Image 1: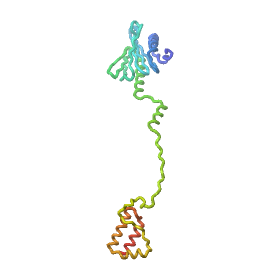
Image 2 (image 1 turned 90 degrees about the vertical axis):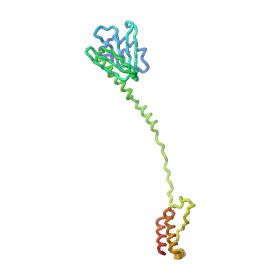
Image 3 (image 1 turned 90 degrees about the horizontal axis):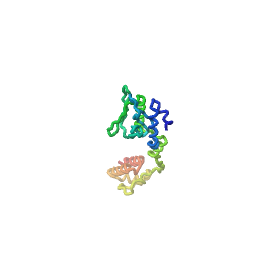
Image 4 (image 1 turned 60 degrees about the vertical axis):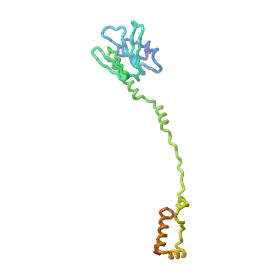
Length: 232
């Protein structure tokens, strides 16, 4: 584990303190948990057993030596419980502070400024990941396919064009049945000539109703109208 921390421990941390902490952490780290940074107190007076802060990809761990360094107390807070982190720099070092969502404020002082800045930067990155998690592109593609299934293809059926309007009109029509007269029929002309003006007008109205209901075409109506008007 110490070999994996060589790239992290580069701000003059006490090697002995780091060794003690890492040995204790070996049995505390959860599955897939990785140490991001370790900061160790450095008070003006000689401190044999300094406190330290460990930040991992899952939590913040405060390490406090007890019983003259023979044991160590660990207090941890998941990133989900952390509301915010802060760093305050002074003449004798920096103070790292974080607040929990339950309004609890914790801090560790006398940290070297470089170490405190590293803590703050790593903490901000973890909090940002909670707000904007990185999604595996392959998983995102699978989710996208599930959320937007392929549209069902509806086969278009070609319908037959209706050329005779009488086919779609109910057979119980109240209008009189019409048979197209032949314009050259002498019997039809004789019948129209026998009609009175009122009868011819009524017949013309009947043809108009047939046109309005789609039972005859406009051309047919115009021909019939012309024949009737010839006798009016």
